[in-house]
Structures are given as structure tokens and as C-alpha cells.
Amino acid sequence: MREGIALLAAALAVAGCARMPVKAYDGPTRPRSEVAVLQGGASGDQMSAHSVIEYPSIDGVRRADAPYVVSVLPGARRVGLRHTLSFGPAKRVQFCAFDIETAPGCLYTPSPPLPPPPSLSGKGDDFQWSVELPVSIECGGGSAFVLRYAARCGSAPGVLEQRDAR
Image (cartoon, rainbow, N blue to C red; front, side, top):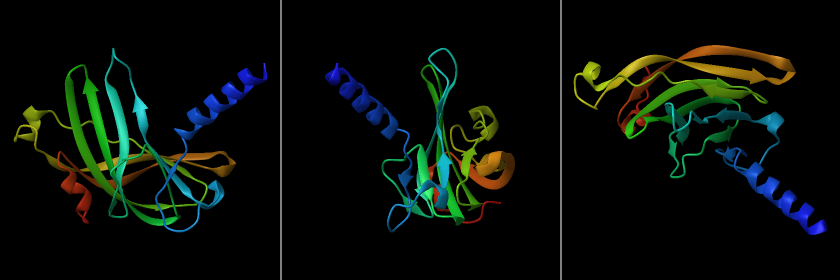
């Protein structure tokens, strides 16, 4: 019985670690109330479009692991995300970069637009465009709202290094 409970606790701990934010700032780890969290993740299944949002760049620092959930210090941030949209064997990837002012204890969830189809981009799979990126924001005390941020999106990761989002 004890072994079963220990195994269950270990399994829950491992499962919980997958959702823990990756620290994207220097210095010691801070409590959740002192940091802002950027949330990406995946949605969809095998029978519908599958969307994945990851963060390969925060404040100009590229990350090889591109986590789904990132904690950052409050203040002005430059966020680079990778949005992968797939349906069966078809796959489209776009990179978006935007500037945002974050607050402590808040959760930020961007919703990038669907990438344009190759027939509209005029250059096959290569594209770059300026968009308004909706970001859902939830803060302590039950407040939740959506703000739109000017973003630059494109088919190449080089868009993450561009400073002008317009």
C-alpha cells in the first residue's frame, strides 16, 4: 500500500514538472507572486488542427529547448514565439515577436493568428506580416482581460531578432 502511494506521488510530481514555468531571467528563483508567466502549449488532436505555441526567445536570448511555459521578471519584455499548426501531414510554422509590459502575478497567453496560406503570401511558404496579436491576461483577484499587441510574424526565425514590430 505504501509503495503504491509513493509511486502515485512520484508520478504526480513528474507530471506536474512538465507544467512548471522555465525561468527566463537571471538570479535566484522567485515566488509566483513576483514573476509574470507566459503560457503557450498545445491544443487540438489527431482529427483536427493541432496548434503548438513555444517560446524560443525572451528578451533577445534564444533558447534551444523552446519551453511552453516561461516565467519572466515584471517589466518591459521582448517575446519571441513559435507557432506550429499541423493537420495530418500538412504543417505550417510561423515565428512572431512582440513587446509587452508584464506585471507580477499575472499569466499571459498569446493567440497568434493563423499563418497565411501559401497562395496569399505570394512567395510560396515565405511570408512576413504585421499583425495585432491578442494576449489573454489573468491576474490575481479574478481580473481577466485581452489586450492586442503589435507583432511581426513570419516564416523564418529571423523575425525574432527584428526590433520594429510595425
